[in-house]
Length: 285
Image (cartoon, rainbow, N blue to C red; front, top):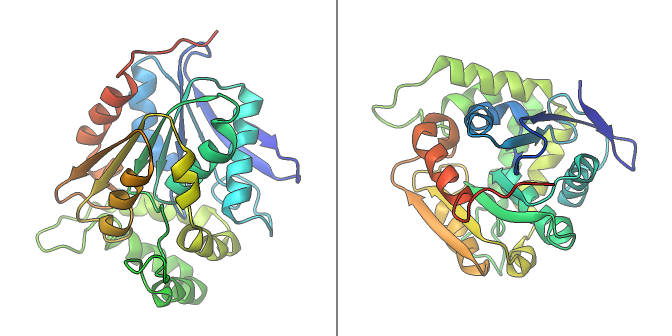
C-alpha cells in the first residue's frame, strides 16, 4: 500500500497511476469519503495518458485515524507532503466539495508559491465559506451543521445511508431513480473513516473562510457547480468564488446534484479534459 508519513507522524494513503513523465492530475475528495470517490475520473484520465493521483485525507479511508489535525491547515499540509514526495510539477488540482476547500488552501498556501500548480478545478466546492456570518449573510445557519454533528454522533451508519440515498445525489427529488450501488459505495467509503475525523471535519468544511486564499490564486481555474446542489448551495459558493479568483471560468450545470461527478460523469469528464487540455499537455521532465 502506498503511504507517506507527514511531519506530525500521520500516515497518508495515496494512489498514483499512469506514466511518471505525464502531466499529473491531483484529485481531492469530499467529506466523509476517500480517494475511491474519484475512480471514474482517474480511470478516464489515465486512459487519456495522464498521471493521476488521489489521497485519502487524514482520518478518512485508508489514512491513519489520528486524533488531531482535522482542519484545513493540516489537510493542505498533508497534500503538500504527498506532492513533495512524488515531486509533482505542472499539476492540475481538482477538488470536490470539502476537497475543493482543501485544494484552494493547498494552491494558495503551498503549491502556487513553489511553482508546482498549472491549473485548478473546483466542483461543488465549499469556498468561500459555507456558514452564515455577518460577512456572509447568504450562508447556511450554524444549526444546519450542528444537525449534521448530532446525526453523525447518534447513528453514523444510518445517517450516511440517508445522506447518500437522499440529498447528496438528489435521489430525493421527484422522479429520481436511486442507484443502490452508488449509495452503497458512498456508505462503504464513509464507514472506512474515523467518526472523530468526520465529526471535526464538519467544522473544517463549514467554518473555514477561504476568501483570502481565493484572492491570491492566479492560475487558470474552472468552477463547476450543479444548480440543484442541495449540499453546497450554488449562490453562496461557486457564484462568489468565481468572482474572487482572478482567472476563473464559471460553468453551471442545470439540474445537476452535488455528486455530479458520479451521476453525470459522461458530461463532467469531457469538460474537465477540455479545460486541462486548453494549452495542451505539459510533459514533466
